[in-house]
Image 1 (cartoon, rainbow, N blue to C red):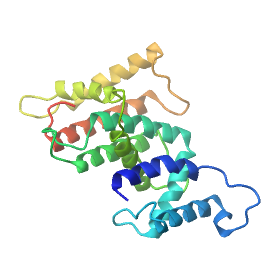
Image 2: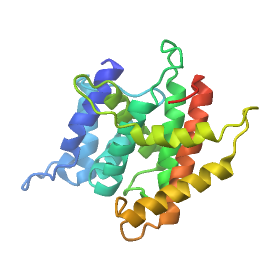
Image 3: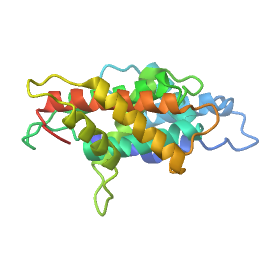
Image 4: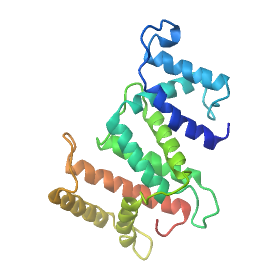
Length: 233
């Protein structure tokens, strides 16, 4: 199966992995939710509905399927990924500044940095039986699928482009960065949004955590632009 179709398969059919098992079933595949997911993965591979990702064994693919199921049952983490990956797909495409040369590695690195920042600053947490690497793989697949969407779309990368304006203005003539200035502007922005009620912080999330997350994302934007040769997003 082409990689594009396989990404869409995981995005669309992964909802099925989160569905509760029907009562009364006694087969091995229905013994536990995890077993049901593992059987789904085996059947998908055997029927060629899906193929093993590069450098991943069947058992690893089954474990990834379990992690996807758990991600889908973790609303705060799922919503965070959908929002940030929609923005990344729009503002951080996997192509260099010339618009022709593919650079998937640059987008992948930015996606991983955004997920790491969310975890490090407490904006999201790892669902059960899910590693950071599995969460980042799911994020990359979501980002790729959203980047290939056709039809009418919204510019969901606006916030990333706004952060990029801070990065651009903090770039000195010799190419060095005034990261202190970037941090200061981000701090003022978050304080203003919180004070105006436009940014509502859930229990357990502090303004300081949001500021650090935004700063980490700004660094990821800077690194992405270096990797793709872009002056701005």
